[in-house]
Image (cartoon, rainbow, N blue to C red):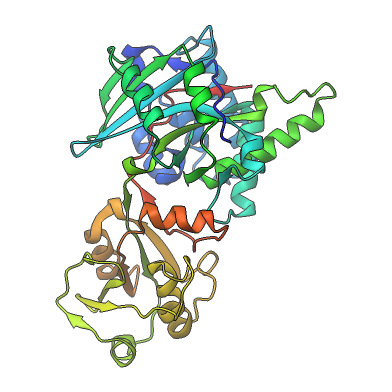
Amino acid sequence: MAHLHPFKAWRPAPENVEEIACVPYDVINVNEARTLAKGKPNSFLHVIRPEIDLPEDIDPYDGAVYEKGAENLSQLLSDNILQQEEEPCIYIYRLIWKGSPQTGIFSCVPVQDYNDEVILKHELTRPKKEDDRTRHITTQQAHAEPVMITFKDDDKIQQLIEGAVQEDPLYDFVASDGVTHQLWKVQKTTPFEEVFEDIPKLYIADGHHRCKSASRAAAEERGKNDNHTGTEEYNFFPAVVFPMSDMRILSYNRIVHDIPDDFLSQLGERFELRKDADPKPSQKGDLSIYIDGAWYGTTLPVTENPNSVEKLDVHRLQEFLLDPMLDITDPRRDKNISFVGGIRGTGELERLVDEGEAGMAISMYPTSIEELIEVSDEGLLMPPKSTWFEPKLRSGLLVHTF
């Protein structure tokens, strides 16, 4: 069964929320973070991207980066820029993007649920990134950003959510990307906690490294605490839990930096190419490939009697094109391939090729939430960068300290 853990969040005053809230750490690079935080001393980017306050040539894994993040968070707390709730609460968090609402429950969840696979993963994590996030958590003594989690729709939960949003929200603002963010506080948390005990599984949507790092951080803190009971706040981490029907996944596209001079001809020998294709594939199994200044469409083969992973377009791309034709056997580590979130559009793919940063771009059909659930339930793992969830949660709205 799944569990919610109400917590005493640190949060901005409503009049300051737009100044503080920011995009997650992993959707922008350090230069973009510097630009977004310029002239905004209270932006939460100073906590989750503290390297922006240090010399430009600093190693992002330098100890000074982690210490700066802890210092910046401590400053926000001591200056009352963020203020802590008096009692543990949960929250209803709604994002509205392009007219469509997505509404979930913002709470903490137990590390033990992750360790016991009540919270299921669908991707591998990279040790270096785990190390980085774990060090951020332990140095700040806080979980600065929530994980995005989903669950199979439940009528009782939906009724509780609808009942909680009848009052005016604590926050209601439109971010610079046009997404509306609304937040309601729920002080009577018991009904939510009880109904989640009937939910057998939760599924990580976005935030695998934050989950794993929360687990590692909890283990470190437990090792330092001779009086560990399991109720300490380091045993819980923040998440926004959405019904799967509300989840929206965009494509996660690929670029290949170096290709053979005659690669278009090689593609034509192996695949049936359709010239002047739409840059966005219209159905599962189709690809659009940008090469030599033009878009080509094709359809991927599929393994006979495939399992849930082998059905995925990202797996079929790997099996039938990237591995056999370009010797990209491990896309997680191969420097000849990079990934471009679908939010950046196919124009970004064209630019990268036209300006010589890539030899070829591949536009994918989005993975579905049903495919993610199927893979997770079977205990399998997706290839890297299989899903791009949109809209993104805003960081700095609620912070969990321990």
